[in-house]
Length: 224
Image (cartoon, rainbow, N blue to C red; front, side, top):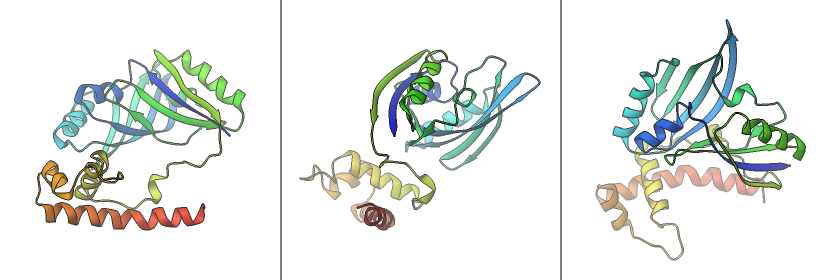
């Protein structure tokens, strides 16, 4: 199996430009596309990887105002949109081949770039896909390309659903080194960052851990 990680940018992307504008990170999965009267339409499912509710609302409101967006469905941190690409617009699904598959969601970063991890059984299939991308993207940098066992694949639908408070507590703990050895901070430090009482923060963190741990342990037992 051949895997590559790419840093990309195309100026007409409706997501990454707004990530940069509103300082958020959005994960996305390209879905399908179709053509109608010479106009191309593509659908993508996204989810926010940021906790700033104000900025996320501004992001969604700004996306709704984009005349290219023909359909938009929002449910919490998840949203699915359809975009009218016109006759010349760009979208990965227009040149995505059946030999290529995404092993992780696309990361739309506030640094103004998209980060893709895609794979193929044969290196030549992967290289052809990259060459096609270079003809469609304003930026296309290869950050890695290697032959590797496929051991790290993202499956969002099999992971347990966390509440917003649990997700926020876990992210704050991880980003501030709570799970490092030795620990870089205490529960009291984390609760101050979160702006809640230490008992409240601990409750959210423990409940989140108890949801995630069984799935992680079960996966490790099946993949020793």
